[in-house]
Image (cartoon, rainbow, N blue to C red):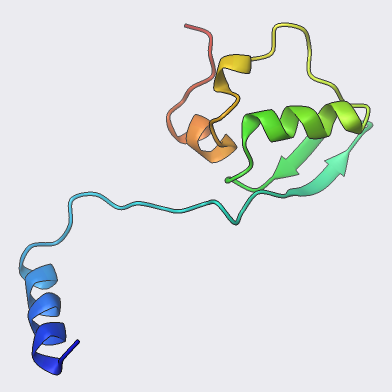
Length: 88
């Protein structure tokens, strides 16, 4: 891109700022900390619910019967930001 194109883009963004911001969390999908005695896990926001449930099962911390499987493809950060706790 030319200097003129870059300057034009910068000016347009200044005059008309975006109304939405998108955060990509695909690379933030790891289990960070485990407290088995407290039965808690600290994870990154991009971890999918299904991956957390699989991890918990493989590490002796399986989720309870009736866990929110309809959230399986959603990320932990997405569920929290949408207040999607599944209680109706």
